[in-house]
Length: 230
View 1 (cartoon, one colour):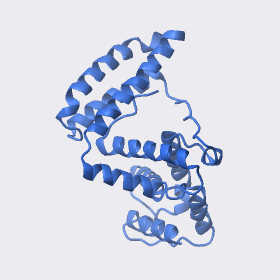
View 2: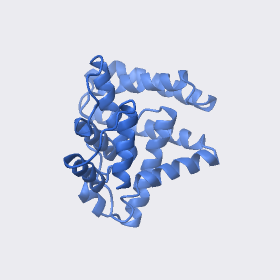
View 3: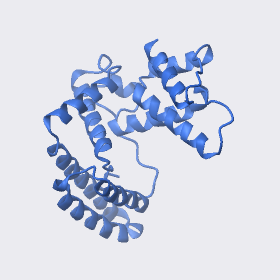
View 4: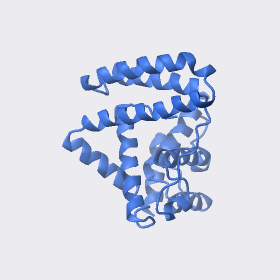
């Protein structure tokens, strides 16, 4: 019930105070999200997407109902699971998470987004001076890779993808080293809240790995850092 009330309150806020009751089929829909393990924050992110898209269409004619948000909430949930390597009930029951699905975007487009987000993170002041040298080096390396990525095939492509994973690890290592005790505690608390519905479903070792992945995802979000790995 708390989950449904929180969704209802958030939807009311997004609808400028117009209350849309979550009852009947809508209650069943939201209850199913909770049963699937959709964290409340991820459900909020899906609702945000739906409402923002509605605003882009022009003046609103009626409040957004929760049923309109279903596809966006499930998309946000799928992205969250892939980021954590948690892709469904089988993974939750297993001793280790499944590997994330391969990206559907092209390698050149991926590199373009990574360079843009690195530049944006620095321009917006989300990362400190300790990142400057790392970002400059990574951006330079990615620029070279971007110039040749369209023609990369076979072993050369596999080598580039492997290198992107290494760069991603270096970026995360720098991000972790920048954490102070308060931020580290805050991120772990957020991760525990997100994963509350999974703790009893998973083996301790698998849950510990998923928890660290959740902390890394939240850290990227907090600092505006991209996932360099492809």
